[in-house]
Image 1 (cartoon, rainbow, N blue to C red):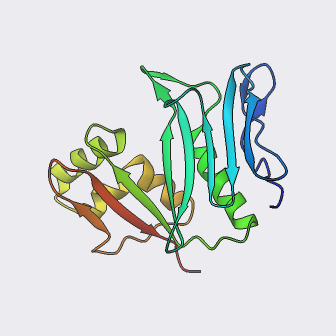
Image 2 (image 1 turned 30 degrees about the vertical axis):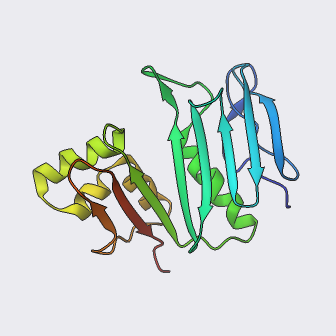
Length: 174
């Protein structure tokens, strides 16, 4: 496995961030900029940084069909983790999977009732009655657009009121 690059992810010793650069795959425990120890896993199709068993956590996973999905839970009890930066982690993961030769064509959004993205989606949908506009209004929609995944096909938003929302953000064509 090729070397994993820092790719713009912040790290300031004794302050904040996480040093994510490494050679090879596997699981390790690393000390963050704020001094906390987190679990860091790197595989050919999976990158995970987490504290404890559940949250906070940042996960990037490659899926069949040249798709990528993220689970980004960087806030717990209303407090953002001082070392976990969701937007920077998305760029970090996309860059490193690209360096590993992965051809990612779509970013998947999967939002459960009560999540930040779900609430943003519902609020915008109630105002516009447009699934595409509602999907783009979310944190994930804006992040996908910034990272080159701005195309939403009319059949790429799946939602049944009261249930999860699933959106496929396709890569922009050059």
